[in-house]
Length: 84
Length: 319
Image (cartoon, rainbow over all chains, first blue to last red; front, side, top):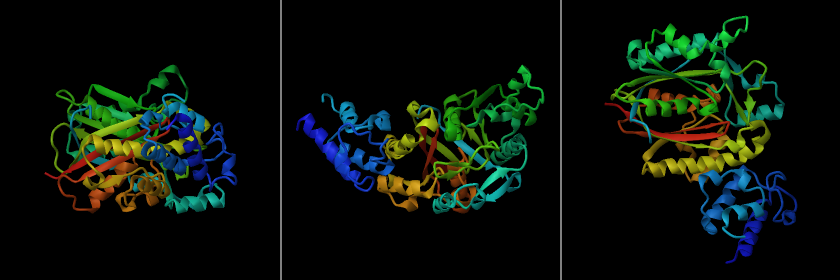
């Protein structure tokens, strides 16, 4: 699985988690500011972290659990993938 | 656990007569916010009705009495507060430079007749101040520091809203006495862990992002504390939580895969969020109202703006 594929999986997960938050999740892109645009919230972030750790196998150190590393799909990938 | 094993031999708080109780309906908030506060489990909060340092002296005296430790046996005092105003008595009407050195810890030391040379003020830790003072007590305890008096006092300024992040904040004062020697009917501090994240130092600017980070970090810390102690949740009788809201603990319990009944939130409704005392109010409530067996374990948890998360394990010693 290459990094672009992983990024796409993250994007699809964010879109699915955003279903109850915004009217058209398909408008979410790699660059969308996830929290500034209220795409995700404190509860759905938990689900996203579970997805990243349990399904994609990312290891997220406790100092990286901060929202600053989850600002967009691109930033998530930049932070948790060695090479994007 | 970096510090020495310590026994908490007393946990005391202000008396009911030290404060005035107010119904949350009296808060100057929109009706929808009042309704949400009530849904979060709050019914009332409290405001000191006397000088906070008068309250501190009463609470600290009670803590010494309960611990059956004389003033001259206290080897160190730690005064903790989220607010700088609790660290300076400042009785002078004229603000001279000397007035800024009227430290509350030294006033307490004088008024209680303590003779300890080790005196600490602990601040800038928000609502984990008292938890952190326990950590500090364990780290400084040793052959020359056996008994430590830890005090926490917080009074919300008159012109500041007590409503923050779905919580209502009460004025509060508490005191603990820790000892290196085994004490009957005490709590052993088995572990303490803390996560600090300065990205959120400007709380008012980042409060929405902080709220989003609250659950992932809280969950991770709780898991870390259990793993580092070689325990799982079945070994823990209760989590002794902060009183920030029932809803927040429901979310956290769900995310941890534990039953909500594992969260001991008995004091939230009456006491509200008491800055750094919530965990200790809850554990005192439990110990007072139950026949607690020797060895029963509890997890305490706190969160403070800054931002800080802390948690650890306490074990009841009934011998």
